[in-house]
Length: 382
Image (cartoon, rainbow, N blue to C red; front, side):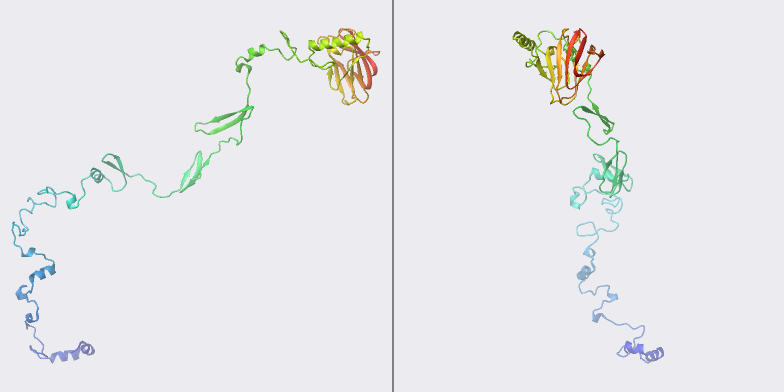
């Protein structure tokens, strides 16, 4: 009966079919529960043979991965296997034990058994207490476990104080302002005065004028004392000066050569009966000099600027009493103002004293009548 036929039928029908099969040991018969069959003829292993019916015991051992120890006798000689209670293996024997007791291996190197050679650094590391941290070698064969917290990745760092800024991979720093004004300090007449704090920062800057006291220059006072002053100097020895051209009438120094020349000109003029006054044209502010005596001072028409001329004090320029000087302010020239220093100047016929004015086209005669007294008269004089 096929399985499909069994599935297609109901239980009652199947049970009726089973009951109808006869017991027996032939085909189409059902075997009873105590029936046995000899399957050795079919190549099956029989329990009663205890594997004696194997065709090739060696091949079977190989297939089962048993090796050949099963075929060796128990003993202590070559070609035998040790028993489980062999005195060489159990505790106290001479064989190596799991706890390290027993016989030691002699002549076997670590490289022969693939083991790591003994190392002092590894031994020191293995002896460290703790489970986590950073290994740090502090000396030869000496290690410690650093449990401090360290940066392990990019983190934002913020700077403060004299430099500020922040960043994770790069920081652009900004220096704190020290309140010093940006610019250039010092020049040819000034030096730079600066203040630097303990951190090397410039905290103040200024330009200071260069001023040296006389006492700060070596021997300056001594050397200056040996020089003539600019005001009213007194010369010693034989001082020299440039000789002015003939008829020069300025505040320039008159050398002896100039005076001799002027005297010679005057002597020649008188010897020849030439009574003409020697004219001097002046287009500037002017102070009378000793050589102006007996001359005509002319203010030319080309100089339209008002000018101030001055009669010096007798103590500085000593004109001889009776000195006569003629002043001509030509037409078109600027007004002349004639003053006097400390001495007295009278306007003839009026008794007025002080500075006199000579108009354009005016002509004045100036005469010294006493050591410190002058008189003036003429057309256009007021």
